[in-house]
Image 1 (cartoon, rainbow, N blue to C red):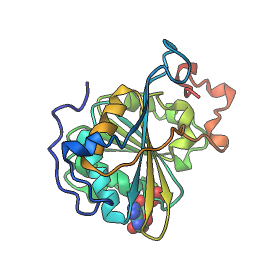
Image 2 (cartoon, protein in one colour; image 1 turned 90 degrees about the horizontal axis):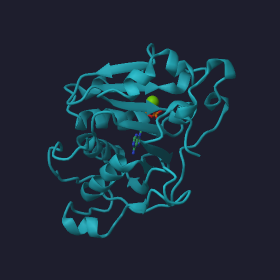
Image 3 (cartoon, rainbow, N blue to C red; image 1 turned 120 degrees about the vertical axis):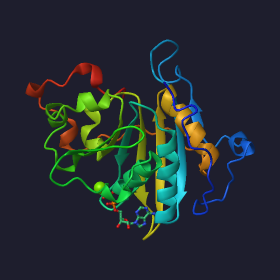
Image 4 (cartoon, helix red, strand yellow; image 1 turned 30 degrees about the vertical axis):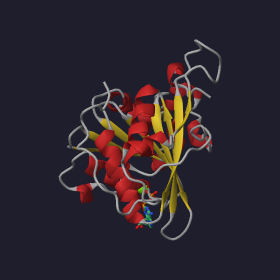
Length: 239
Ligand SMILES: Nc1ncnc2c1ncn2[C@@H]1O[C@H](COP(=O)(O)OP(=O)(O)O)[C@@H](O)[C@H]1O
Ligand SMILES: [Mg+2]
């Protein structure tokens, strides 16, 4: 299912860069760049549709607003893959997404230190995973990540580029780039129709601009599970 009808409605976003209102004409500007399902490999190749967008986050309040608005739009089983260097704001964004999902105490959302996956109760269960300390992607399978990824909750995965090999092909990737002391750029890539729909709805309540498609980065040794770990081939990323 999708998030239709589940949002708590449009709220103002005084901190959001650009100041675009959540009016219908904001959608008309099509701030989300879309690729139909068949673009990459021809019709019928099963490639999910993609959409991309960029948000300029002038300060922490803007990041918080983006997260809250996104959290309101998420649906059961949603997977949010977060990337970006240390201090980019991945955890800050997770906290705000949790707030948008109605968590009672957003401050409880911190970098998971002793456990690799933390669970929070909200409108939908939230599973917050920090892959930073994983030795290899297959460790996520050992932790039972599939139950989370294919469950009814929302998965927020920090350092997702380290575990790209085990992520479902359909997800929302948010790459945070540090542009200054307070300034961040969020590069959003929706893969799959449900996520494209979320990005479109997000564009109606938060200023986004179009951007060319960019796949979830795969870098470093952690994306390559050792052969003996036997990561299911079906979970290999599309590119
Ligand atoms: N626009 C912004 N968005 C998010 N965090 C910001 C922003 N500007 C400054 N910060 C600071 O950057 C740090 C982000 O930390 P954190 O969310 O833990 O990053 P990560 O999880 O990516 O390592 C915090 O200290 C926060 O106060
Ligand atoms: Mg973090």
